[in-house]
Amino acid sequence: MLPKTSVEKAGSATSSGIDRAAKAEIILSFEENSGRGRWEVGYMLYNLLLQATSLDVEYGSRLLNEQERAAIASVGISGTPAALFSLA
Image 1 (cartoon, rainbow, N blue to C red):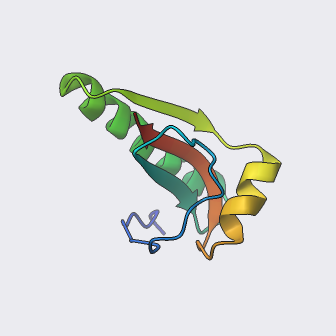
Image 2 (image 1 turned 60 degrees about the vertical axis):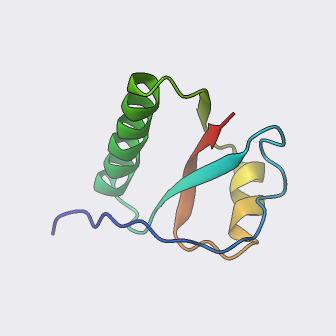
């Protein structure tokens, strides 16, 4: 089975201010508990980084720690949160 890639709006909930200075945050998560799901998150993050760089957009990105994952999961995002991409 190939990894499923989709983009879904999770709503207008805040992610407990993980990056309080950001104008917008994109949270990347995966549904399946395998290497393929994590690989897909990495591919999506790399794609966002390339696009932001080519458009000269200020951004930040990082992998999430356990506390940040728990905070994000509490606002109802399905899957396992793995990475954050934020627009400055």
